[in-house]
Length: 192
Image (cartoon, rainbow, N blue to C red; front, top):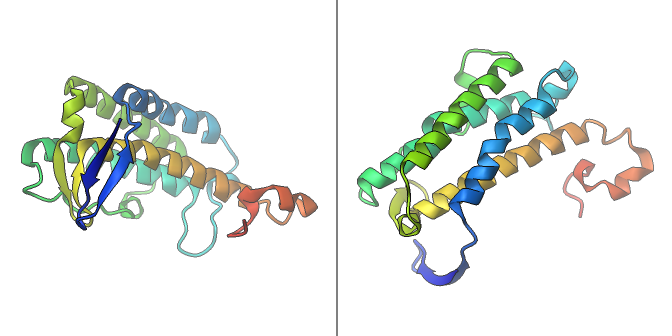
């Protein structure tokens, strides 16, 4: 569906809305199992690799996903439904995972799976209609946003961090792949 929308800068743009709640639910429900199958039991070197100072390891990314379940996705859905655009969402601390007590990756994966099941169960219980996706909330940085945008961002956020984990792990072998580097975009820094 396409329609014009005025953003918080007053600019009207034509948006193609591809968001479908059942499709989003299908992807969001698979993220914990995919990460579990991929990461659980890997040697520590894979789980602690990063891209340099102030970057995240796969372990830290899973912690971040947990914090999102606790303080971002469904809490902001509830906030939006209760307050609309009158009251901005609470600010989300994107690095709150570093303040959590240390846990093994297995513990984090188990916690993420539990929290995601709870989040998706709550989302389904809201029985949202298509028109609910147009309901407005207020993001502390972006201004007015729709519930549909927030939920679509949840999906894109999962995919962003899955991609991040793949990139971090691939770059661990960036110098080891030799001339194949030319064909492996994932191991190159900002090259095209």
